[in-house]
Amino acid sequence: MTILRRLTSIAISLVICVTLTGWPSNGVQSAPTTAKAYFAGGCFWCMEEAFEKVDGVLGAVSGYMGGTVANPTYEEVSAGRTGHAESVEVIYDPTKVTYQKLLDAFWRNVDPVTPNAQFCDHGTQYRAAIFYSTDEEKRLSEESKRAIEESKRFPQPIVTQLVQASTFYQAEEYHQDYYKKNPLRYKYYKYGCSRTQRLESLWGKS
Picture 1: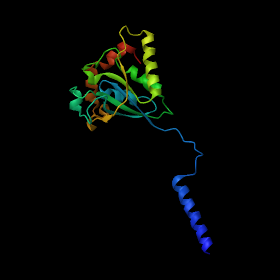
Picture 2: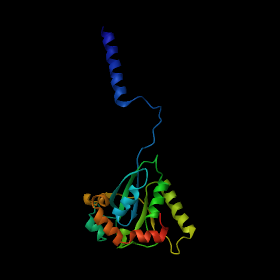
Picture 3: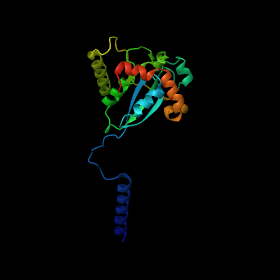
Picture 4: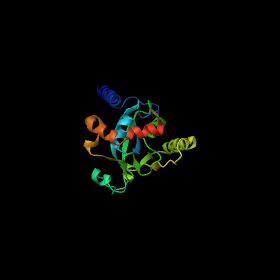
C-alpha cells in the first residue's frame, strides 16, 4: 500500500505540473504576438490617430523620448527644457503588420524637410524622428529614408532624424486618445495647424 500511495502521489504531482505549465514544446518558441515601435512626428495626438488607423496596430501611447531629464512633464517638454520630442509608442501585432508598413505610415504623416518643427508647432520638441530599437529596425529606417532621398520627390534635404531609442516616458493621462475624447477640440487644432493641408501638398491625397 505504501508503494501504491507513493506512485499515486507522483502521478497526481505530474498532472498538476502539466496543468500549470503545459507539455514541453521541444524547444520551439512561438513568435511574440505584440511588438513596440517608437516615432516622433510633432503633435502626439495626431500621430496617435495616424497609427491607430493602420491595420494590425493595437494601440498608440503618447509620450516623450530622446531627452536628458527623467520623468519629464508636458510643461517641461513643451517649453523645450528637457530635450525630449513628443513621441508615440506604437503597439502592434507583427503577424498582421510589418515594421516596414509602420515606416510607410510614419513618412506619410510627417513633414520630412522642415527641421525642428512640424506644421504649426516649432521647437526641437516637435522634431520628426524614428527611434529604432534593433539593428533590423535601424536598417529598415535607413533604407526607407534613402528611398525617399533617391526618389528626388523633394528639392530640400530629408532632415528627419534616425536615432537609437531611449527611455519612453508616457505622457499625462489627459493626452492619451485625445482625438477620441475631445474630437471637436482636436479637429479645430488639427485644421488650424494646417496639418492635413501640408501633408497633401507634400505627399498628395491618400
